[in-house]
Image (cartoon, rainbow, N blue to C red; front, side, top):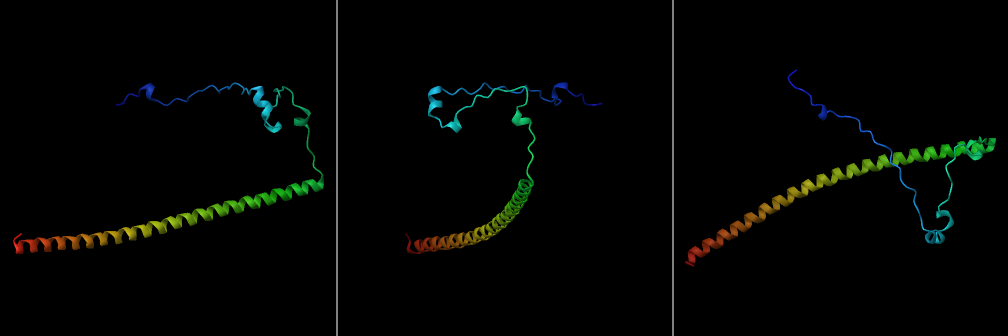
Length: 137
């Protein structure tokens, strides 16, 4: 053992207490102005399950058929949405590749044009300088 492990540098699981938030208090004057759907409802937590929570919902055969049909339709719709998203993602990637490729070629073109321009400007400056020297200016 060449290295001694420092206890403080080891990872330990962090134990946090779940945070408890105070209930939101809305002033009465504001509550009056709110529509019924947005008004706070005073329902206390119950120890026992209510009748509505504990009752078993039994569907009629027609209702059950309709429910399964709706589930199938929504499943198909979700699958189509996933496929559509994947296709859109692929199109996006291809578009980005095309843009990158055209961007590279455009950059290359600009680079060659700059070279040509600077070369021409350099020749022009050299010609002017030569002309100055000849005229003795």
